[in-house]
Each structure stands twice: as C-alpha cells, then as structure tokens.
Length: 139
Ligand code: 5GP
Image 1 (cartoon, helix red, strand yellow):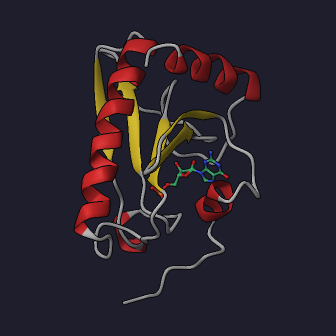
Image 2: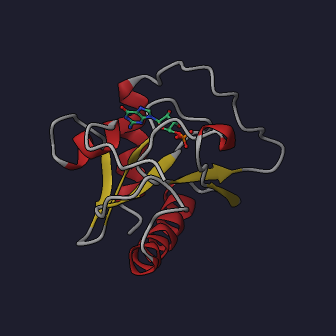
C-alpha cells in the first residue's frame, strides 16, 4: 500500500503551513471550505490522524471522523438553509481522489440545483468567508 505523504496539501493545512477558511475543529477533526466548491457552502472534513483514504484509516480514527462529519453536516445544512446534503469520499486516483489525506465532502443541496462541475476555478474568497460565517453560526 502507498505510504502517507506528509507533504500533501491537507497535511500542510493541519500544520498551519497553508491557510484555510475554518468552520470547525475539535481534538479529532478539522473542517474548512473547499476552495473550488461544487456547491455554495461546500465543506471538507478531515481527520487530524494521518491516513490516505478509506483503505488505510484506522477504524477508531474513522469513527471519530464520521462523528465529526455528522456534526459538521448538520451545521452546513442549517447554516446554508439547505434542503438536503450530498456526502462524498473518493479513494485513490481511479476513484477520483486528488488530495491524499482522507476527507469527506459535505455538499449542501437544494431541489432543482445541480452540483457544479469540478472546473478547477477558485471561488471568490469573500463568498467562502460569508458561507463559512453562516456555517460557524449554526453549530
Ligand atoms: P478529492 O481528493 O476528494 O478529489 O478532492 C479534493 C478537494 O480538495 C477538491 O474538491 C478541491 O477543490 C479541494 N482542494 C484542493 N486544494 C485545496 C486547498 O488548498 N484548500 C482547500 N480549502 N481545498 C482544496
């Protein structure tokens, strides 16, 4: 199995070497805005534990991660006044994974509003700040 790479982008965010628009943090997880969001209010939830994806994460770390993801999901739905949620986790390149520190995508959904394609376009920082403030206020 491929080893965890300490220089992946999310490891750098966890160490504070790169910035993020944080919405939640506890002993086990960090949640922050996706900079190329596929929906308004698109949040990523990552464990503080090191793991590439669903295939190598320790079961106890996965329990803590999914518990954190549930907490964040409720705040995303309330803060964004969403009607539903799509939650995604991609494992390995063939599975669509780009960043090799496991994460859950929390995507707020509204009836009739499609997810945007992953174009690589970064969202305006002000939009991310506005949505993050709404979500933080909903915990
Ligand atoms: P995946 O690995 O599940 O395919 O997706 C990685 C996600 O991380 C993408 O949705 C992408 O927009 C997001 N992303 C990539 N680089 C950064 C970054 O530096 N900061 C943040 N906040 N999100 C990122």
